[in-house]
Image 1 (cartoon, helix red, strand yellow):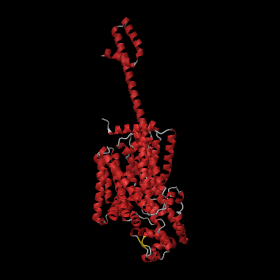
Image 2: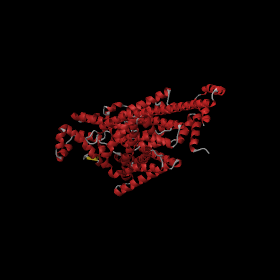
Image 3: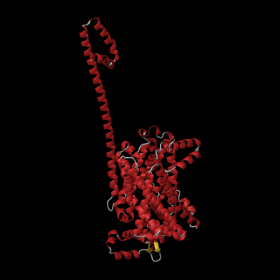
Image 4: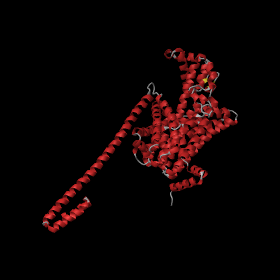
Length: 627
């Protein structure tokens, strides 16, 4: 009876013969890995980036995240092609053929990212429940209950994934439903806003046209507000450009994280997919990852832009009395302090008493106060609150809250799953059973997030993000080298026009995403320590050492192989000489025993005629006679 995998291969071969419609039908039916990638990238990081893009630039940066995810999909397609063509773990291929420092760095960075980024996901999920869905649980024991629910749900999903084919199918369905829930929640909010007549659809459509000028110039919407700040307009312009640049680069660098690149090949290998599945894997990424991500993030940008962009009043509980939202006070103060420090001198301002600082802040011009309020970074719950009057409580709290909860839970599940794979890979054991489950539960320590993240973020977030960003360009370069390696891919390496297209896409992705990642890492600080710069330099040195170590190891293996071959050849030649000498001595003894004469001549003749038979025949003649 044919196995499920054999039936899949037959279906794919028949679909290839049946034309484009038949092929798409088969691909949709068998899709899966792309949905899992979608579940991880649609997490708290994407939500935060999308929100701030909307706050800063309104609809002008709607193009950014679609471009970023397209570049990420190109690289994921490349690693899928390598994995399905070789059937080998890329971790091993990189260690053996590219650089062991990269391979081990890739695995360690993935584990760090999984464990550390699980902490804020639990915090986000808990906040969605306690602030949007069930405010009665907004206390310590309520948070404990929500955290327990999230961890148990995620663990059950991981256990289902570990059960094999049936469990994996259930796992796929769970994640597909969650991704669909996320997308529908945010689409529902935007549709409701659109039906209320509050969205400028022509301006939104224009926002999908790339505008790189925002990397160096503020959005034109700020022109009037900047002019009102007078002599300090350049200060605020610099603040806007810096923020725009940082959020653009962060959004580009985080669209496809380092752990996503590690996860993709092991999902494929676990399903035992092969060469026949290469088209399916690529289709899955271009549809199940790209489409949900673009829709969900665009909806968040649209909602945030409509509510916050160039609207200072949105930062206040009471705009007339200048009473800020509680969670925005610290960020607002940071901007105002920087503005007053410029005017009075940073050292002079810092030495002032708190009472003096408070008076200066109160006497600051309304134009400066409004600029600070416009630029304050909001969170998902500020957005939900702002939507209440526009969409009603059902959409602003329940639908939006469910979308945020779905983002958090789906990301927790995938982070735990990736960690199980990563732990098994570095241990060199099969990706199942106790090692896999224990590896997954290691990331589950993120359940402590709501209770420790605010204090631990400083110590954990900076080194983890630097390590991850540092690895992204090097990992992308490795995928590029693997795709062009005749040694690794053999006849499966792309050729001709296809190879040119692949290389152009990968080099473009490497240039954009790699530059963005290096920029973010280089400028990351750990307090006053330039941690990112040191990390990049140290890792660069380690990569050089790893490169020469790999070359030395290969050379040693070649020398050892040549030495072994020479030893075998030398040993065989010695035995042949020994055998030939023994046969000659036996022959002389026999001739002496025969006493010469015709018999001796006949033996001599036999010996001469037999001389052409070679050493093996001589041994055959001499063996029995010498016995």
